[in-house]
Length: 456
Image (cartoon, rainbow, N blue to C red; front, top):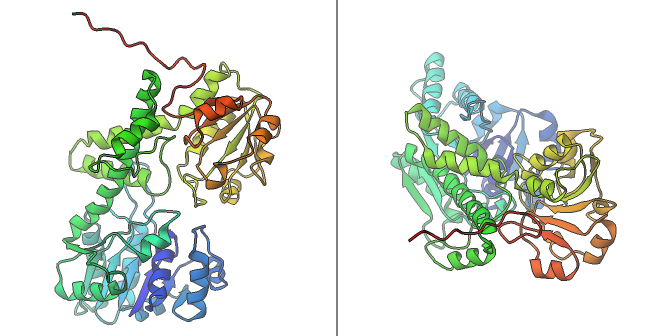
C-alpha cells in the first residue's frame, strides 16, 4: 500500500519506518530541508535502539522516502498519516495548529478519496476539527465532491522500545464508523495482526480519549507508588518489599510501580495537562488527575531536598556528580526530565554539577549551552572527580554494577543519593558509603516518625 506520513518526529519516523519494513511504500514529508537531507543519508534526529539501521535499510530498498514536497506526498498516499507535534499551550491545552495545517495541505492537493489518519496525540474532538478544516478547503476549491474519512489511530510507543512496540503492538486502536475505512485499515495493519486480532474498532472520540486515558493511568500508577515511597520512608518500611508484595497481585502487576524521582518525557506530563484542560472546559473537576500531576512535581524535588538536608543546606561551592540526564534509559530525551529540576535547583543554591549520560550529552549541551556551573563529562568516571556526592537520576544499565572502590576514591566523601533504587542499602553500607534511596530508610535524615498510640 502507498502510505504518506506527515512529520518525521518520534512517532512519524518510527511508524513510517516500520510500515516500510513490512513492505508498504512510505513517503515521509517534513518541512525541514536539513532534516530531510540527513534522513536520506541515514542520520536520524533521535536516539532509539534499532531504528537507525531500519531507516537506512528501507531507504536503500526504496520503500522509505523522505521529501519536503507536500504535493508529492499527498498524491502518493492511499492513506495520509498526520504525525506532527501537538505542543502544550500555556494553559496546558494541546496546540493543534500543526495538525490543522497538515489537514489543510492534504485538502488543498487531494484529487481522489482519502483516508486521513490522526496519529498525533490529540484531544477529544480533534477529528471533528480536522474534518471541518478539510471540508472548508475542499469547498473553497469547488471540490466538495471528493470523499474522505478522518480516523483516530493513536500510537502507544514507549521511548526506548518504540521499534519493538511498533512491530509487535499490544493493540491497534481504530476510531471510525466507516466500514470501507475499517477494511483499508485492516489491510494496512495486517502484517502486525497475524497471531491474534489486535485491532479494536470504536468511534472516533472514544479512540481519542483512549490514548489520553492510557497515559494518565500509567502516570497515576507512578505517582501512587511515589506517594507510597514517601510514606514508607517516614514509617520505616522498605518500598521495594512493598512493591514486590503488591506486584504479585495479578490485578496490580509489576509494571509502572517502581518508585523514583518522578516521570518526565514528551507524553505523560503533556497528556495529563491536556486532559485536565479538557476537563476544565466542560466544567468537570478532574481531582485525581490534578493530584497525580501535583505529586509528580513534588517528587522531582525529593533528591534535592535529601542532598540539602544531608549538607545542612550549605550547598554553595559544592560539586555534585550526576549520572543520568535523560528522563528514562534508552533515549536522549530530556523533556521534563527530573535531572533538569535537580540541576537547576543546585545552580540556584550555588552548587556545581558534573554530569554524564550515555546518550543525552548533546541534548544537554543544546538545552543549557555554555554554563559555568555545568561540566558535561565524557565518562561516568570522569564525572566523579572531586565531587562531594554521586547522584543517580536515570537507571541506565551501565550504572548498575560500577567500580565502587573507584567511586569512593574519587568522591570527597563516600555519599550516594540513588533516585532509582538500583543498589542495595546493606551492600552500600558494607562498602562504607552513606547511601540514600527512595522509599527505604535513610541514614541521618530525620524523616522517620514515631506512630502515636491511639487513646482508648
